[in-house]
Amino acid sequence: MNNLKQQHHKKMITNAWRSSITGLLLLCGFLSSSAISQPFQVTDSNQNQAVALYDEMARALRELNFEATLVRSSGTRLEPMTWLHGVYPDGTEVELIVMLNGPDMRILRIGDDTSYYEPHDEAYTIHSDVTFGLLPAAFYKNFSELQPHYQVVGGRGVRVSGRNTHFLRILSRDNDRYHYGLWIDVESKMLLKMQMMTPQGDILEQLQVTTFVERENVPIGMSDVRGIPRPPRLYEVRNLRPPQFNLQPQWLPAGFELLRAGHRRVADSGLPVDYYLFSDGLTEVSIYVGSQQQQGLPSLAMQGRESIVNSTQQNLAVTAVGKVPVTTLQRMVDSMRAVEPNATQP
Amino acid sequence: MTNRSFEQVSALLDDAIADTREQAQQLDTLLSDNEAQQVWARYALYGRVLKGEAAAQAPADISAMVAARIRQEAPPSQVVQGRFGKHRMARWLRPAGSVAIAASVALVAVLTVQQSQPVAPEQSVEPAFATNPLGGRSPVSYNTVLQQNAPSEAERAQQLRLLQSYMLDHSQQLQLSLQAQQLNEQSEAAAPQKDDN
Image 1 (cartoon, rainbow over the protein chains, first blue to last red):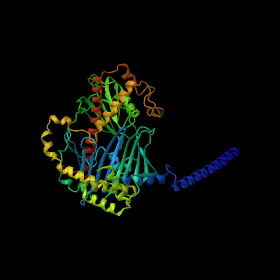
Image 2: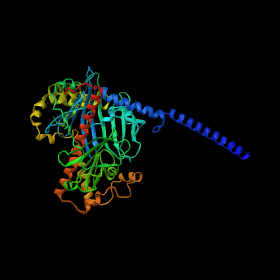
Image 3: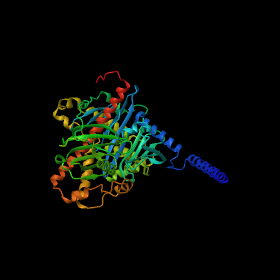
Image 4: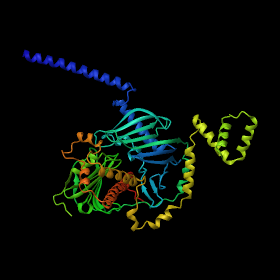
């Protein structure tokens, strides 16, 4: 009995001790979160500020009238372009991107239709309110869409394009994805610089806005673009055939979901494949499964702006492409298993 | 214009010509000579840029150029409609933003490096292995494979084309997926209405 009492007493003491530690920790947390001068401290208030800033950037990309020039670099390649954006009084968004080096390629987006013009090839229109190719589509949406698998952290921005910036870092919660650094104009909330990097910090792609001018109205260069004839809209073949090889990845990075699946032919090469597209909201991975004899590629893995892995699984050629580390692709490919016992082999 | 006259324009701009008669003469030249006026304008701009006074006018000029060039462009619908037949469908989509070309450049670089330098996979790849073990087997086996049966020029070109076609296809599918998402959102927004496109 006495013994029991003693134990109880001991427990109470440890409890008191514990709660005072918790209190101390809370106090520390409060103090550090109020000290804004410390960058990269993942506290709640920092997190909220960073999310708010990200959302403001997404809105700025949709709502600002601006004229900008920028350079995209990856590896040794530099691509300068002009980037005009505006909103007509009726609320229709208009965006024009012109490549300044090499073939004269332009992208013109008016409202929900984006047209891709090219000098020697067929121009086409896609029904989409995001211009593909410059920024990830997720940058035009609120951060909540990426919330569970990415976090955004604020930091102190440096001067970019002659303007003061805030700095945001978009980190995946695991090391299965690439990270982004964003420099956002303090005044307009416009994205002025972007870096895409490996979890180890190697930079794979950069965008740098070199001139940026905000306008009252739609930039003059686009005042009459609504009169420009649009190339034909691209329609998809709706009667997709189901996958035939029934080989599917058993491992996906957290948050990746299947967007499309079917049996079709690869563009250009025309190889018949089972095709799967996975996305986590920010980045996408394509997986192709086809006959090994027909394809004949050696096992290989390359990391870059777009990584690619090719390997043989169960006598089938499996190829994965996507803006993720090559290790992630390899792991997905290695996890390919037959999903049905009566899977048809070629 | 000679270097000498460039100097004179520069001097004039900086108000560095002491002799008033020479200054008057210089001004005369400037007013009569087209080229000299351009030089003057350029020097003046340099000066303003150096002093941080120049307004960012460059984009305005570019936008005007862009507008002019768009106006010059033949109406794409006429060019395209006729050629957009069945046979052409296979080639319909070059990734805007030249993903394919960029990809090819990267691939060539990587493949040639692999040919000449054995072993040592990309350093950046290694740390991730530690955190994501891949069941003990070497995950990046391209070095060995390409070393063993070194492919001929033609085979390599064929392999590159194949790899590039996957990259191209990937970006096409991403665009189509964007379109599908857009259509989904719209059909959700206005469920009973039929798409009038």
